[in-house]
Amino acid sequence: MSKKDIDWGNIGFEYVVTDKRYVSNYKDGAWDAGGLTSDDKITISEDAGVLQYSQSCFEGLKAYTTKDGHIVCFRPDLNAQRMYDSAKRLEMPPFPVDRFIDAVHQVVAANADWVPPYGSGATLYIRPYMFASSPVIGVKPADEYQFRIFVTPVGPYFKGGAKPIVVKISDFDRAAPRGTGHIKAGLNYAMSLHAIVTAHAEGFAENIYLDPATRTKIEETGGANIIFVDKDGNLVVPKSDSILPSITRRSIVHVAEKYLGLKVAEREVLLSEVPNFKECGLCGTAAVISPVGKINDHGKEIAFASGMEKMGPVIQKLYDTLTGIQMGSIEAPEGWIHKVE
Image 1 (cartoon, helix red, strand yellow):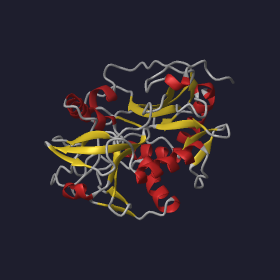
Image 2: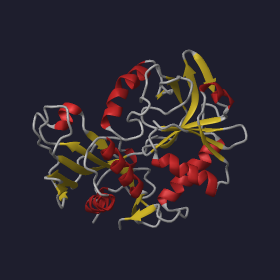
Image 3: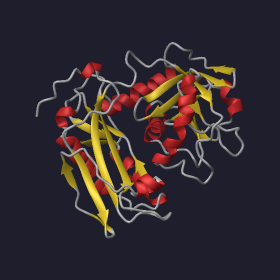
Image 4: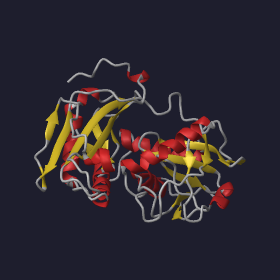
């Protein structure tokens, strides 16, 4: 297959309709065989469970063209397990982990000519999702569900390089204790939209949410986990039962320990100790790591020593090492890279 005639260096982070997507339906207590389709439209009842009671969850991962020309995905088994866990929490029938990985493989292979070339800075974003499709009027789980995966080519999250951003401490709560903050449910993102629109209107790139019980501990942002670098150059990662288990964050922890020889502390992090850190970053699939230059706490600025011009030295090493693993220039730990072709 030949690559699509696209200006890969100038595409944005937007949805583009590609050739194939995967669909499987759950009915009468079982998932059907599933398969690829060219139809990008969904038809459901006006009373579908997803429309009435927001039964939905999703994932996000990427396919890359590596330095040696292979098309690969990064740790899809962890996305599969996280979606399995999300579905269970929402009383949805989990899609089997092995079938999830196979479905990702099928969709990427069928859209291979949409995978951007190595060195373009672009990637193929993969969006698996599941929703309640059958009518539900009483408040209860639906009886039927649909699992789908589509892909879309996206440009680099940061055009011209990653510049440090300014974020704010939010007055809103992201997740309740013993709630759904630890799963990738659509409803978590819906409730964050007002907060992010408000932050953007005030001139900030993102919100940092505190724990709702005491409002003294760092949790995460609306769409990313947070990492810090302490004065000794080691990694500090906030820990909480309501933080989403980010695959990027877990990979960064491994890279820090095993590749860079850093000490890593995964623990509760108090807002009051943040001024003692030298570097800060937001980590997730889209950007890998977004450097943070300042945190605004109700008018009081916390400025990191790494400054507002570029990534701090430790976060830069983490970013370079992890992206090197993803793109094939650095040897990956066993099982991290799923080769498609």
